[in-house]
Image 1 (cartoon, rainbow, N blue to C red):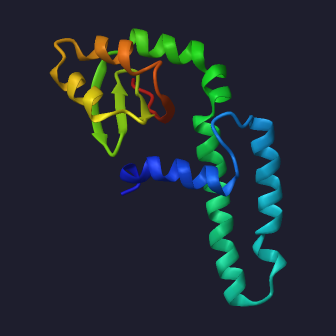
Image 2: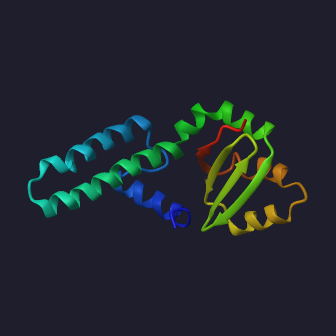
Image 3: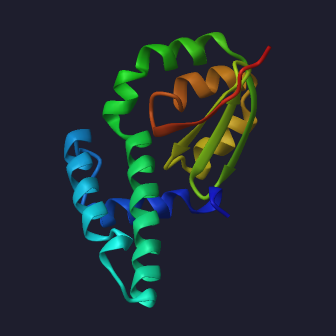
Length: 153
């Protein structure tokens, strides 16, 4: 369920933060701090209101971490390591749902790529060399985030 709703969550979190793709990490952090202050459950004594605000607070925290993970600044700061990893690792598996493509690599890293069209996915499935297709048509073309890092021994 979470995987299926990633694209919707990007829109929802950006709306919550009044942010877009170009919002800097510093701006995002300021907005996060303000939202955490505004929706902190300890500010409320009414139990119903407190529970409601606690739910919003959890969404604020989740949204912040999610938006930081897909930020262009985050991608840029990890670019060298990311490119080295995908260049030297084998593509082990992939799956696709609702414009989100997840790629699992042999180094234990997995990434989600957002906004991948059904056409791109179909071409990936039909490709003779899927790893090459991924490196040429997906890895540097879509907003992505690292979702796992397993240490393979």
